[in-house]
Image (tube, rainbow, N blue to C red; front, side, top):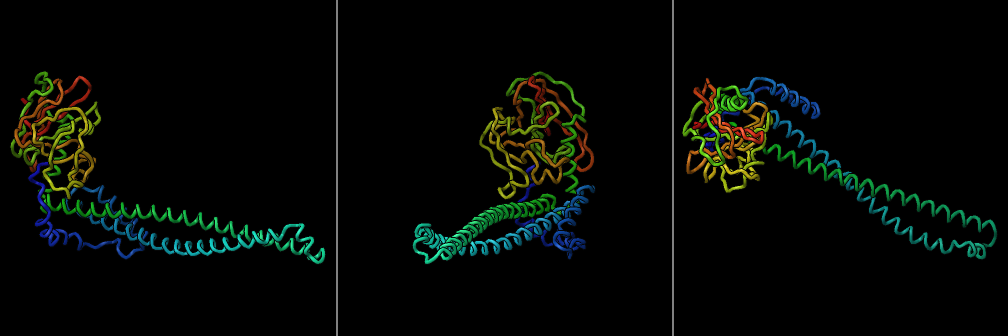
Amino acid sequence: MKSCLKFAFAITLVIFLGMGIKGVSAQTDECAGKPVDQRISCYNDKINLLTSQSKTLSNQIAQFNAQIKLTQLKISQTEDKITLLGGRIDQLEGSLDALSTAFSSRAVETYKMSRLGDPFFILISAPNLTETISRFHYLERIQGADRDLLQRLQTAQTNYKGQKTEQEQLQKELNTQKANLDKQKADKAALLAVTKNDEKRYQKLLEEARAELAATLGLGTEKYLRDVSEGDTIGQVIPSASGCSSGQHLHFEVHVGDSVQDPNNYLKSISFSYSYDSDQYGYYGTINPHGSWNWPMNDPILINQGFGPHGFATTFYPGGVHNGIDIDSGSSATVKAVKGGKLYGGAYTCTGSYPGTLLYAKIVQSDNITVWYLHMTPQ
């Protein structure tokens, strides 16, 4: 998506945290006041209901609010479990130390007793047969008590290890939950920033995202232009807002048959930069190119949006996934074929917020791969 929509958070958040969120947070929360387990279930139901409703800015903010509250509840629940488990582990440590000390002491005494309990020694040292039998029985009881103490020690050790493992797992779960909470808050802030808390602006972005999907599904009109080779110029990125586009960028998408592919697996590793700050990577996505193809635009490469289910994609794109990479160049608007094949030029009619024609090119390669180049004039 166009980089000019990706404003820095600082000034925007001051404005919208003061006014934009107030209207949503002031709504009655029917989940509040219930026991924790019931509140978790209530927020899950609420999120499912909101997801099934039509996409609006207020609906999306309500989803973020419910997700944030749900995650906060889960964090609180996990922290309570860790605290309770910590107390049990402390008790186990005390029991384990006491049993270990007791067993060490008893082991020494039992060893001494066993030396004295030699049958020949008992026989010659005991005054009579009754005393001999009593000594044998006493030794047996001592040894039995030692075996019981050893078993209790082993059980305590097993329980301690098990609960320490559970504590470590809970801590990892807690760390993940806190990371999710940070991301949810950042995504909500980014949504308010990019839409300026305006429903019309939200619908524009939603329409643009849907139009890209419609074009790559073949809902527009297209015609064969010519055969091209790798590196040939196939057109120019439109240098302004146009049909279903808020501004200059190339949407680059790869298909194998009917399956959308991750362009990172095809484009080679190069030097590039993002049009947004690092604290927005989770919202607009990142790239990790590691393939063999040359890029469709000249250096320096600027990334406006990554591939996959990042925050912006889950908010605006059908299916919650951005199917391509949004690219711009700091030196040229020229678009080149990443591989040779049959070049087609296409158009998709857009209405509403960005009326006009979404122009695109696609190249059908001989290896059953189709590459789409959106928001450009094919030639």
